[in-house]
Length: 205
Image 1 (cartoon, rainbow, N blue to C red):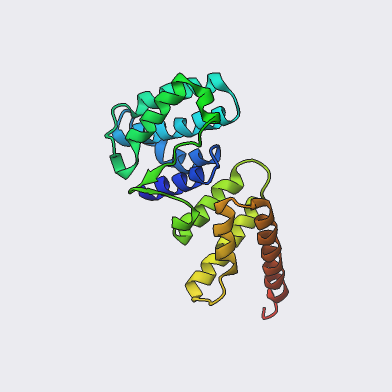
Image 2 (image 1 turned 135 degrees about the horizontal axis):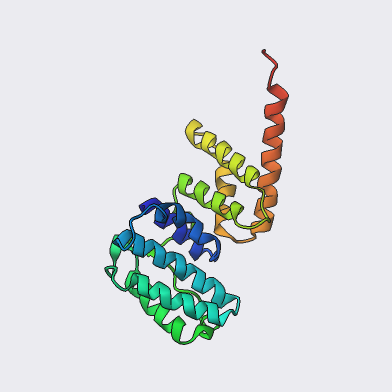
């Protein structure tokens, strides 16, 4: 649960409000209804959706989701699982009353353990998971490229390599700044690595 919370928070805090919910859905779906964990994740999923709609000027959708998200989080402890639940509830109340407020202020960051989690706060495995979530969100990125890049990054980490090109690029990809350019570099390095693997496959069979 903590890993899912951190990954989703990082994706959200880096500005990917639509993709963030994918970090929590697999954890949320099997949970028994009305438990604190179920209410927390359900509320966070709807919080990200409310922010997404508000940022896209869908005021009615934002208001409705902000209200229902606040209801799910109403009975959750203010700092349940070290998440800033109370602050999120307060923000949701303001958003429900005035959805256009989202145009005048940045969304409230999600914190876990008192930290507004960003890409650089993640472990490599968390960053690889976040990158996969981003790649699966829409059609801009090839999921296979990101999946292979994560595998190559894992090999870099396990080997103790002094140059960790794939690791660095995956963190940059999650970070969101110049994501298109970072993805292009990630794809180029991944295709080059695939080519080298194909060159040697079967040589000793």
